[in-house]
View 1: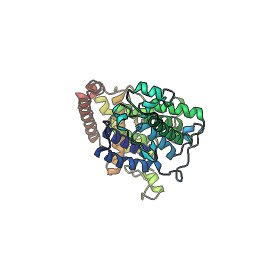
View 2 (view 1 turned 90 degrees about the vertical axis):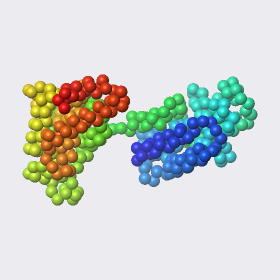
View 3 (view 1 turned 90 degrees about the horizontal axis):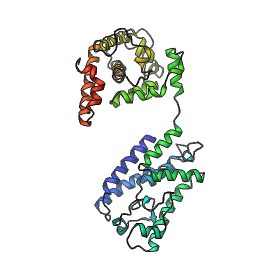
View 4 (view 1 turned 180 degrees about the vertical axis):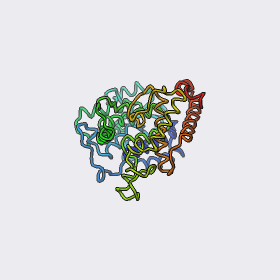
Length: 376
């Protein structure tokens, strides 16, 4: 749910930024923006508390409900005074053209470094244009009211003040708030890690650098498809026949390749005789292109991506591609072929070469793929 909300929030913010490029009075641009603003307002003011309870945590940010947090992000991420649904005078949003023409556009323009609204005298010194005291007080009061409405649901004034200062001073408040959430909320997937340790029979568990293991797909490949697959694989979210049979979505729990043993993750990607023969052919291919020495054999940790060697980018990329190819063969109901696998590697090489030309990263591409450029 959070990712959907953040995606929509960022989408609406981009629309806002594109439409409100110049300080002009409401026009067709702002009419179009008002449609997006109404949609965004409906999204953020919806009461999710009935289905999503408030997050219990020591930090006041995590005492926010989804609704309260979204309103906080809206106030600070959009950041504009004019036509902001949370800044109103007499129940209506405001737009003062002479203020906008003078460069007063965002809430930050009226805030000090300690997240307080500047005084009337400081305002006149900072922005040299005539404005009445009552008009200034009206805008300042509207901003204060919006801030107070957000602060009501946040216990702990001192921590709240630091939080608001951090969000207000950030160039990307949505990103800053998201990072705070992730830092406080994220937990280690101990269940999946313990299952891998048990299935693979690892003894020296301390040498497993799980952080490097999780980050490795993002480093070794540009393919989001491969990254998503490895994320699901490490969290054991790949549906095997063993699981599908339990929930009555498969007629058998036997391996789709050998048809002789129960299909678990470890069996499908390592223990199956068909898979074992495939990895042997992959090893021969690696030796032929000088990716590994002839004396080196592929290990369980390497083939399953449970050994985070950040230096061997191409090696880990090809192994990840091999796992994904085995997974694809399962659902295509075909046996893995070394010839087709090499074609997959060749296709990935061409894709990354094209991306490197567009992005100007040919040196990084050649450094990664240099051992296969001539062979393929």
